Image 1 (cartoon, rainbow, N blue to C red):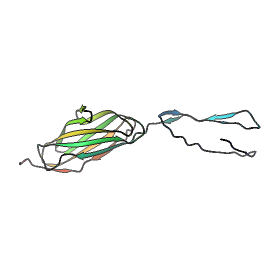
Image 2 (image 1 turned 45 degrees about the horizontal axis):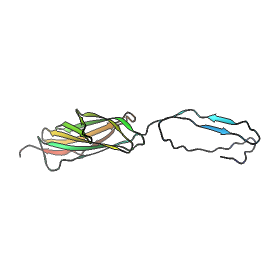
Image 3 (image 1 turned 90 degrees about the vertical axis):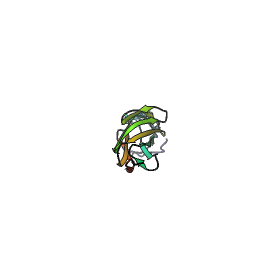
Image 4 (image 1 turned 30 degrees about the vertical axis):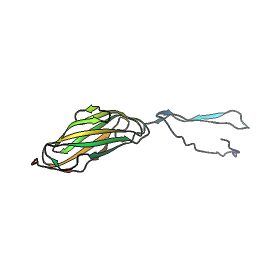
Length: 173
């Protein structure tokens, strides 16, 4: 950039907006010189640490339709999407069944099985999703709901999604 003229004792300022495209350290060095003084002047900013941009979102639905009876197995579809600009790694998904039920299986879209109620997905690329199909065995009549939480190494602020409660009927079929 060229500034035509700066009066004695005055200054000129301008701002540079940078689009950061990767995580890591960033610094900025500015150089200035003029016709009257050929000695260049430079100033380097302090290093700025650019962190990852991971924004997880959970959508979930009860796939099983119709009346639900004690003793049935019901299916939930859980989709964790990374709406950020960086890869999400070691995405920890916690599934809590509220009411009379227990998780009996969880499989992702690649066929990988998970056990228990806390699952770790190795990574979810920026703009991509991971889908989990969860089977819950309903153990008694009453109400049942499913609460899912996800967080990653880059963003440990958990996001949560809970399905509405569904009535479970006694097994009198």
